[in-house]
Length: 217
Image 1 (tube, rainbow, N blue to C red):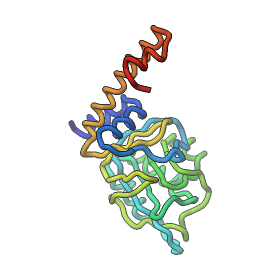
Image 2: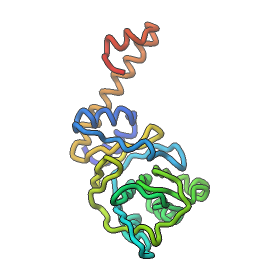
Image 3: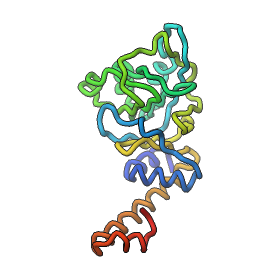
Image 4: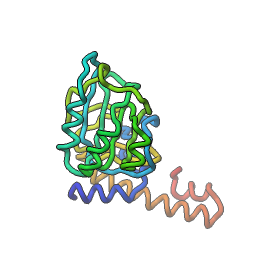
């Protein structure tokens, strides 16, 4: 299955089903912390991760790795920015970076830090950004980018470049690239089973009967 086929497939399955499928197939948690949530709109994003790592500094440096990656990553990428040593209460993303990501056709951004310029991003780009916080503060003199397209940790989840990011109002799930096809097949199976279960519950007017037959809640 090609990457584009995988992306299209994950667009049509529930994010909760993807999270459950990662649990089953990969044997580990794939969903990010609940504080990383949509800050601009409620658009769903699906795409391969393009990663950036930031670290604390007192130097006044631009986020060069992120700026370069926005221009160089393949169209449809999800820009994932992680903070070495934990979360940062500053904006690691703003209006100008959004303009670049929008111009290059990227799918969205996922941040282990803050986003700013919300009014501008909503008004001019309607670009989906999932972030830990909203902050007017700059990274200049506080954080710098140190690497791109390397494995990064966001909360308790490791993101490798090329892993598929599936995110909507339910949260953000990371699907390991090597197991994406198997996770998609499992997620589709979960969706189908839940649809049948929901129909039975409504028809029988009994949640217990649905649980008894399908064993899922």
